[in-house]
Structure formats: structure tokens, C-alpha cells
Amino acid sequence: QVQLVESGGGSAQTGGSLRLSCAASGVILSMDDMGWYRQAPGKQRELVATITSITSGDHTDYADSVKGRFTISRDNTKNIMYLRMNSLNSEDTAVYYCNQYPTIYWDWGRGTQVTVSS
Image 1 (tube, one colour):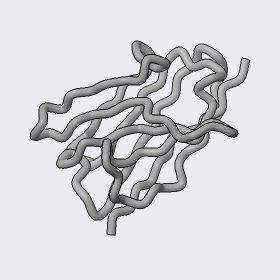
Image 2 (tube, helix red, strand yellow):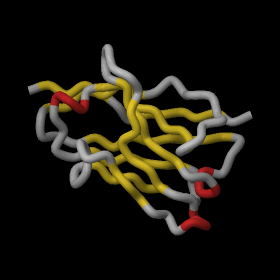
Image 3 (cartoon, one colour):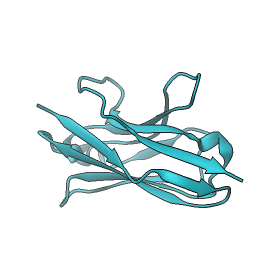
């Protein structure tokens, strides 16, 4: 059974940084195309960053709203995926989740809350 556990969220000021982690059990993250998603209050969950599997070259891509500020990466030795978030602003306030991309077969984790305030 695949279990995803997101962590690293918290409160940050505008312009600040956070690094989120996605730890997985029951699966090797590097063997799947993965994404970071977020859901803000009253909004639908959106995809913010993706990374292809190691066999597909670890290619990354980003939503326009986070491009240049967020960086997705993986530590294959630890089976953890990261999302480095810089230059945070209030629109980044959301619960952040990790999961497969584009097709999701795994259950969602609980996510990690990110709150950005001025």
C-alpha cells in the first residue's frame, strides 16, 4: 500500500522561503512521474510542479504562477521529493500535496499547510 506523507509547511512572511518534503512508503518515487499540488481555501486543487521519473530524465515543469520561484527535486537515496519555495506571497497560501502525475492511482496524503502573511 502506497502512503504519502507531506511535511515542511508552516507560516512564512511575504518574500520568505519554505521547503516541503514528500516521503513515500510502498513505492519508489523515482520510478514515477510525480507532482506537487496545492489547494487554497475555496479553490480546486491545482498542479504546481512536476518531475518525470528517473528513466524519463527527471525533467521538471512548473505552473506559470510559481515558475522561477519554486523548485521540485528528489533525493532518490532517501525516497523523498522536495518542493523548495522562494519569494512566497499570499497567493501561495494553501495545503500542499504530492502525488503521481498525470494519472493518480494513489491515495492522497494529508498535505501540509503553507500560510504566507505580510
